[in-house]
Amino acid sequence: MNRNVFVAFRGVFIIHWCPLVQLLICVISDFNHVSEAVQNCKDIVLNGIHVPEGEQLDLRLTEGTSVSFRGNITFGYKEWNGPLVHLTGTNLTITGEEDSVLDGQGLLYWDGKGTGGGSRPRFFRITVENSILENINVKNCPVLCVLIRSSNNLIVRNWNINNLEGEEGVVPKNKSGHNTDGFNIENTNNSVVEHSTIYNQDDCVVVASGKNLTIRNIFCHGSHGLSVRGVGDTLQDVLFTDSILTMGENGIHIKTPTVGDEGLIKNITYNNITILDSSKYGINIQQNYPDAGIPINKVPIRNLRLQNIFGNVLDGAVPVFIMCAEEGCFDWEFENVQIFGNRPDNCTNYIPHGYNC
Image (tube, rainbow, N blue to C red; front, top):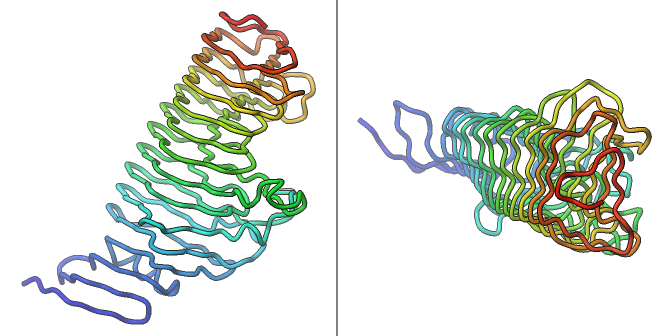
């Protein structure tokens, strides 16, 4: 016979116990009990916990688990690689309750150098299947905020990533954030990132490998753009749409390296993107990343579509910059692309169909 119990002990609050199944609901307010809850509970609430320095919030969850963040979740300071939160599992529902915040204490790490300034922890590393992650508020990532890797059928929505306190002008340059990528997506398929706001100091969203990905309704401030990064793999069938970028270095950035393995980028679409006050480029497509040397065609870019892209760059910035390698760029089409600035566009080795460069 099922029975209900009401139990509280040292930071763990459990309700509804059935002797034939796992504990159903656990409210955790002490980090020391997280591991026990992960092993035994299907519905977990993390309530204002503090994760000690050098420790990881290890959420390698059993199938079908739900986790809610409540209150302020903080992480102690230590120079290490992280991640601060490691999330894996299948059929997960991960949510943030209203006014909850995960605070990575970036102000304690930032020195304007990012990953070049010594060890500092990445925030989230996520590898999941058939899952929803929504309504998460993240503050002050030491470096890379969210790495999504080797995931499938994932919905990420209504995230707020706020590194505004690391912006130059808000803090001195030697105290600013750097390499604080918002979402970094690798080897991930059939997934959506949507309805999210990102204030940061690197790529807003960057997609490196995978297929059938949609990035939509994103607001980016201060970033290096909605980006594609070519690596020694294939990236295909990606849509960036209905998004706004303000006061960043780039609006749209597609970058392939001059070293490393061969790869392929194909069937990439940017649609209905507004770019405001970019400081370096409105649209920056380069096959000579990162050193701006001679472009190399190790990662060809095929079937690129830019549609309804509007905005401006600041004085001295370049509206549209294209640096293709010989035999590196194929079948591009620009339609209704208008980025205003006081310098001319620069197109090397390739001019997209439908655009006067």
